[in-house]
Image 1 (cartoon, rainbow, N blue to C red):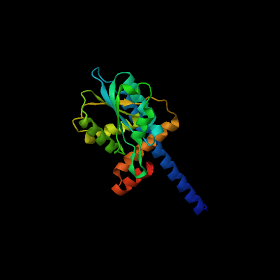
Image 2 (spheres, rainbow, N blue to C red):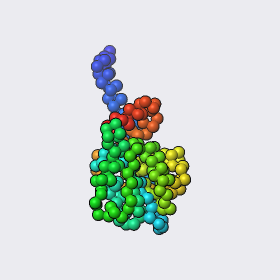
Image 3 (cartoon, helix red, strand yellow):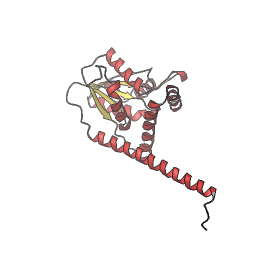
Image 4 (cartoon, rainbow, N blue to C red):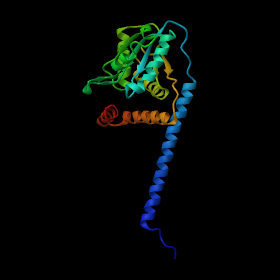
Length: 220
């Protein structure tokens, strides 16, 4: 007569099965996201020759992690591609911290900085409000050139998915040029960005209270 597995052993097998399923789903999700972003980035085209445009730099979690994006914009200034840079995001009024303002002060005096007008937003705090702030700043000071969105490719891919709903303002519509940063990244960097962006998608579908808590928790 065959003995039945002990309860503890059955529970262990069940837990191993669940863990394997979670790992499989996570790997497929992260891998699928990374492939989609890589294909999208490979299809990007450089801006057409014309008048200098405006770079919109999206603030990340901290000044340090946003610095590569700002330096990318600075390189665009030095190449004559843009003559104005809008730094959007990073507003944490409850803590008296305004990331874009700090970032602008950090860059002041850097070679090439004087080649553009650098404007720091002090109100927006996430991607949807960043887009609103960019539109407001462009309305206040119109320009005829293209609008170059500067961030890492994972973030820009998410913005591209949001734009049909959030970039309909005439100052943005049909003028956006995607300009992802090019700094070297480790595997840990890729995994960190993927996790962050998937978390942002999750926040978008959560109930409002839970989404606000998640935004607060990741930006405190």
